[in-house]
Length: 153
Image (tube, rainbow, N blue to C red; front, side, top):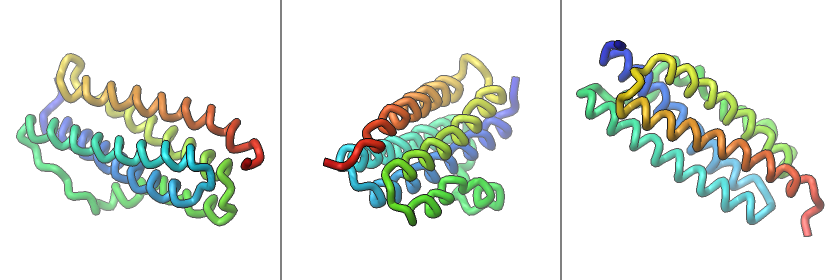
């Protein structure tokens, strides 16, 4: 069974991912033309804000310290920010591709986290739910790519 300290570290790592995604989606929403895609990005940004709070609650229930971000590891993981390069083209499809890339990266962190958390704990269940929500988001983005490829009406 994993030490509480380790579980807290894993959950803090995921909080960083959640905030990166929250900000990434906010930024992405400002850089797409499609009103539909914009609305979905805003929803997902809010969802990730909620993820962060759910994870904070798990850390508190483990009597752990919530990392206030800003760690070097966190800075290194700001993969969502690469989104800026695709924004220069300002094409919905390019932004979607970048979002999918960011989400796939987040998904990897979640899979790794699950290997390190104890099955049967609240923290594990919370992370599973969030991981599944990220999977759904990726599927949703992939189906949106078809809309993005179509000319804007």
